[in-house]
Amino acid sequence: MALCSSEAVILRTYDLGNADKIVVAFTRGYGKVRGVAQGAKRLKSPFSGRLERFHWVEMIFFEREGQELVKIDRVELLRAFASNLTEYRSFLQLSLMAELLFETTPDREPNDPLFRLVVLVLEEMQDPARSDLAQLYFQVWYLKISGLFPATKSCVHCGLSLLDASQVFYGPDLQGFFCSSCRGSHCQPICADSFQVLDQIVNKKLKIIERDKAGEAQYSELQRIMDGMLRHSFEREFESLTMLREGFGPS
Image: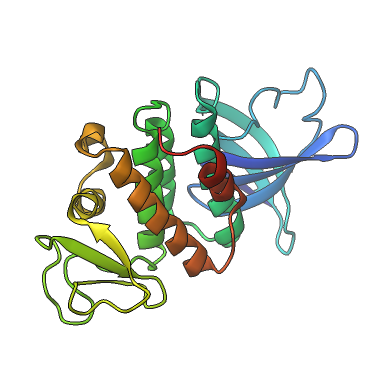
């Protein structure tokens, strides 16, 4: 039996019997981990208030060779990211992050760059004025870290620079960005202003990107592109994306 300790973000919990909980957490040192927190449902449990979704914690647990579930021994709360949210849209955006991590990351595969991205974006999500930008930033960089985001500087077909183009086109079936001469019949147009915002997301740190540099039209256009890219890359629908798209447009 090995004793492990790591920072973690709580993704989901499930009731197990009358007193226990199964916890799914994305940890910094061990990747996605599933474990049992014994007695977590009891009123005087030492886990009380520490296993909520989107909590950033220090988690200590025991793992046994050949067993999927670890035994969670102790949890120390570092920050409760969802406790001060004032907008339901922001909660859905956090839910999208959790859904992506839960559904598309492998168990027990450490990914330090992804963990740092998660904590960075959770911080920015606290401000409703920056939550749309933070959501886009997470989607772009999640795909980049996964090796699934296409290059943005030049046309994937002819190599022409796209940064000064009046309009850029995205080909979902070809997973690439094209100039107007090389676009296919099913390519989606992206206006120059929107593409400049995307270039900032790819090349600048989130904290120095100014939210007011883009309007609702640019965010809506980029969000449509990124939603399709996620669905195409992972070949599935995401419930949180559907809810965001149907009832809660960009703020």
